[in-house]
Length: 362
Image 1 (tube, rainbow, N blue to C red):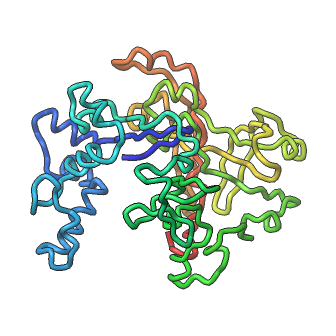
Image 2: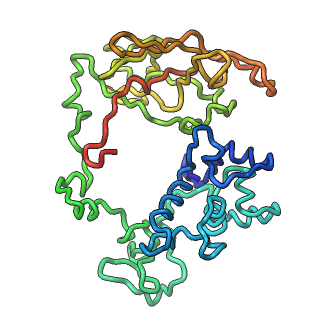
Image 3: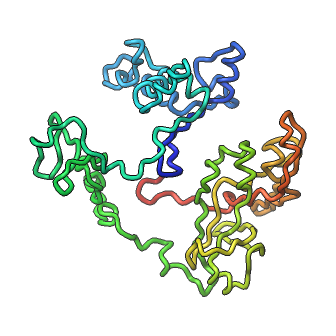
């Protein structure tokens, strides 16, 4: 379950384990998702529930109580009950929308997979605080408006507004949590620009170095989940290297030319898109795309991936070569025979080194 803020509104998306749902529809339900998945892969929140309960089986540590079913007192919550409670109690408007179709909130989300909470949400922090007497406000020394002894908003020019969902009801730039954990660096407790390895002073333009932004998202695709969404893929199926005209003139390239982008552990080749939408000194390549398969008739479908070879030399270096791009193919869906594009983007993940966060290790 994820929120998908792709615009000024709010909507949620609900993804279910495909094989588990398929087995249920075949009359072969399983207790845990890993029993249905290849390789015994756990559903993440199901793993945390089971792990937490096994650490505190009798409840003596005070952990088990937080994983008990709201519908079956004393019993451990199931994943179905977990989502059922969320959809019944914490998604505004969903219960009413489900009832209008004669469905439970869980059944509604299983049917549609998405729900729009609100179409516009530009300034949620500017809503008035509900359920208080404006003539007899209770305001603490920090300017927070209190409701039943708890901060419910903040005074803004004398008007009680809900503000932000923080202890102060304001945007907080100082992190007491970071300070308490012993990080003295002021740039982590009060965010400001950090002179890191990607600071302009650390990029040697004269030697051809540029900052690569390899992970920005397109509004038409969702992570790696939308390869089978045929209309979305028709809109966005390639990921050229974005380059500012200043850099393009310096390098002597124009839109459609091929460039080699060299990283610390490898390189990839892609076409260029010259645009004012990227700053000079930076090149960008979107997430989502560049899928490949090693067999003509196996793996990702032919309209959304390239056929490739993957070889390894004596030094352990790998080389991925594309044999051909996307092609139409016959299936139960006649649209798969209408695939007109060949370029499905360039795979870049293999060329990026691992860089754990120096503080958290993540």
